[in-house]
Image 1 (cartoon, rainbow, N blue to C red):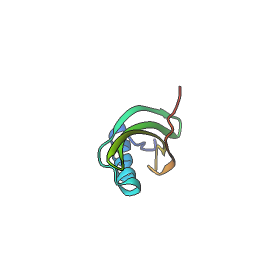
Image 2 (cartoon, rainbow, N blue to C red):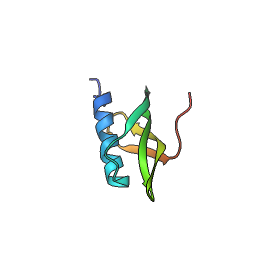
Image 3 (spheres, helix red, strand yellow):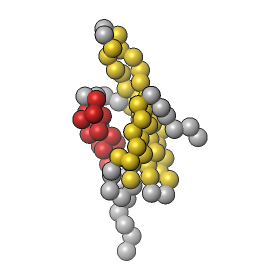
Image 4 (cartoon, rainbow, N blue to C red):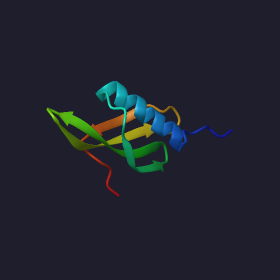
Length: 81
């Protein structure tokens, strides 16, 4: 029997939940997503307000394809391929 893996829409929802909980971010853009064996590798961009200025920020995620657990989150980084 084949194990159900998260699809792209489910991964996007996991990222939305994580960004809202961790940083209070509700709007973001996925700039890269790739499923590699047991992980989704995803880059995101969002705006972060510092003082009165909004700055673009990137972040990378590694998400388990079966459980949806965020294995890695690094603000200010992105996957390079």
